[in-house]
Image (tube, rainbow, N blue to C red):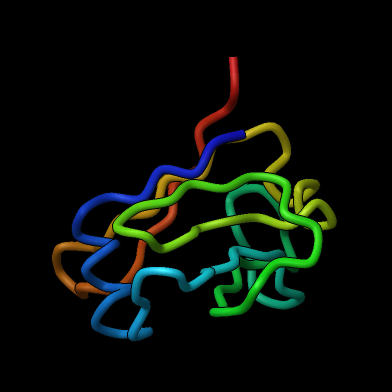
Length: 98
């Protein structure tokens, strides 16, 4: 799997989460809600250092990552992070790996 973060999403993380170079932003499976991949689970985001980093993308010095224990949530999909043009909130897309 790969993590793709758009320029707009990177700006969102800088502004909303105050992410700066050297910070780690974790995407993880959160119990509750729903996602296109799993009913009863949704995407969680937090700013913290990894325990068992499995996948990472670094943009502007910010480390976007998924832990080994959360790989199941992505079910052989790439994660695409962007912002919704209307709400200006984060939007996630999951593309199946070939």
